[in-house]
Image (cartoon, rainbow, N blue to C red; front, side, top):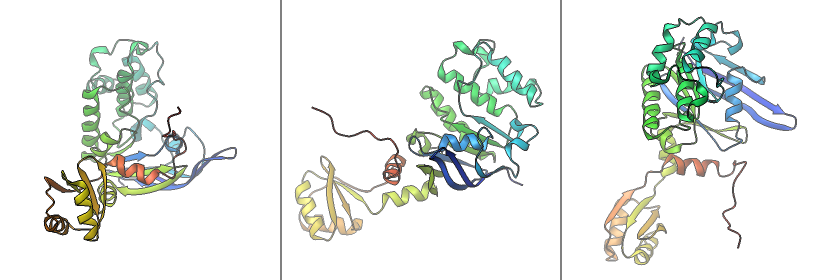
Length: 307
């Protein structure tokens, strides 16, 4: 059986508040699955339930077994949920040795994962003196300790410098390419866009979308064409006369929908409107995400600035 995470009918309530509302999804191997949504959407709660840290209604299976029934959990699934959940008085090496001992993992594995995440030089330093980025790397080392087929990360890029961001992005891709199941929650949309193959999008406790990255971006891009011109007013009039919907968002760029590239060029040519660039718009993950979650955001700031 391929290693997977299967969630069925997951529901978690805190009094009258429903944090997770009848959520069902699967996370497959050989791909990076991004888990995104606004603050308060239920992502962290769902991850805690998967790891048996919170009880809930519904079913969660790790490769066909509930987390609490696993003999050596770190050999089945490795997870980083909170990089600060480490005793500050322990050294990095001793922290990992303790994890290895409690999961029947050979002690020799500790130095292997420290090298893997770039912490060999500080292995004997106390974690209390680590930066957030160093603690993130230590948490990732702990997740890898049992060489598990499934890894789950909550905001793994927190505190990492640019080199660290590139490293974790590449590292997750390598894990997926090796056939592992990679499940990652992040608010860094630009990084996730270059990393994830599939997306699970939450909003107010519910699953808003279960979709491939390619399909989400294609759908969000639609038939929009961006035209760069020094005659935006004339261009908008010509495109509207041709049956398109034209608008501007940036100086010198006209956005048109409802027309093919050939018809846009023909309409501008007939009206003798010069343009320097015409390109099919490709939506970013941030753009697609904001559009998809605009009605399910729990906390949002007012755009108005008080006098």
